[in-house]
Image (cartoon, rainbow, N blue to C red; front, side):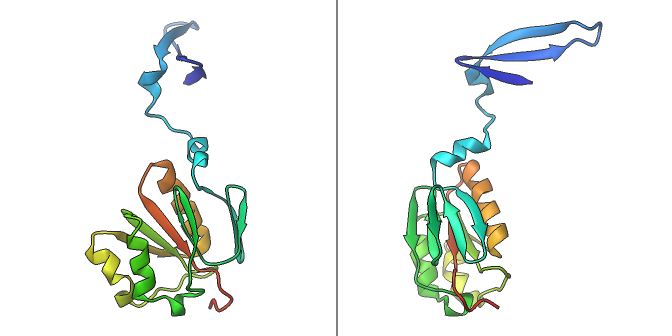
Length: 158
């Protein structure tokens, strides 16, 4: 298992022919494919969420919001029934490969015509409850994907 020690990484494996441990030094560049979740914290990762509120880095947000790796922007619609195709078209301006729409505590799908504009441009659209939307955003963010999450934070959730 690799252990980071500055510019060089220490890799240790136990030999099966005895109880000796073989220790070799490997340049860190060879192990750079492994990413840790902490790496994503230099961008806008979602740190916590609860009913009607999320924490992005050190900011508490309790209004509908669009979050990209490098931008936090308030968003007009407050619940899924208020979401229009024009609201979704704004998400296309961020050039995402995936858009996640968080619908609140419970999952509720918008009419297909609302998200069709994004899908016809080859953008993946996922609709989820907030807990799943926040987790999925962080996972895709850690994978360096071009992801946008749009969270609806209104009181008219059903």
